[in-house]
Image (cartoon, rainbow, N blue to C red):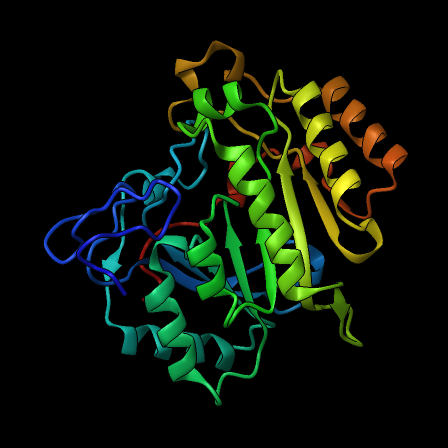
Length: 295
């Protein structure tokens, strides 16, 4: 891993992570904020016992509405060794986790891959890479060595919105290319006898207030560029004004019923398969406590 000149994410900030931190907030050791069973993922991932979720600190994006801002933007967490990370993976499996769910592993990819490889062959459950979709080819190739399931966001199609809300005008170009590569790696979704996802791609899209047309553009891109019968899409209504949302007047409210209904109607027209949240899901309780549990 090139700690002296980091290019793990599309920012390619070139930070020397041996002595400082990158744009993402990452240094020389993995930083983790929570490792516990999590019930609030899609049904095919959470199952009945929960997903063994590891929340990594820091982030290559700067989303003004991030529900996990305490760890993504404020970098809360504890630095641990690769050996300890491998132990955490096996502890989650022992607790009954259906899968190992790595949340925002992008800027920790080399450490994560090493930890998964250390945990194997004792680690038997599928590995889920849960990311913002903003991935470099280098990191996709690296994480692809261990990822059974990709669970990326596709946040925007519009570059101006991506720049305004996430500080990443190149987001759609990068994320759409990354998602195509994720599908190439995993192929069609494969479910076990229990209905849980063992392999494949699930694309998440959070509908934002005032984002009706952009959300529809995202769904149309998916329908035009990926085989809908071989992937799953998760359309989410859980937007709640968080973090710096107050700086953007148009984001200072919850999603309207009309906006969300129109997005769901278009998803159905396109033949999108997957999961569509109830609008009542816009609750703060879906954000877990970041208290170093399991770390």
